Length: 91
Image (cartoon, rainbow, N blue to C red; front, side):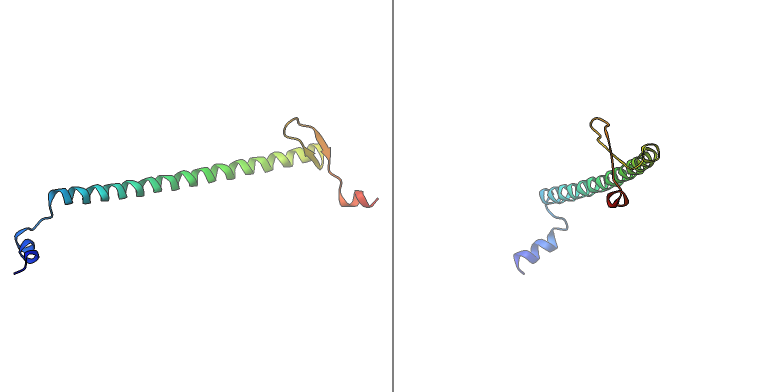
């Protein structure tokens, strides 16, 4: 009987240090997977917030266009520049 076969028959468990290393690696993998899941949830929530903000921006742009017409607004100082339509350019 070879030594390897002998060890397998005699020992029904892996060494304590091997078990500890194995458990630590599985724990780290589970921790990383959990962290990845949390990041995915955060990403989803951030994308939702961005969409909501984009919708609010579009609403405000529509209100501003109703009040001021087709204009370009400098977001630094609020100054307005009229946007010429293609029809205006032809006249």
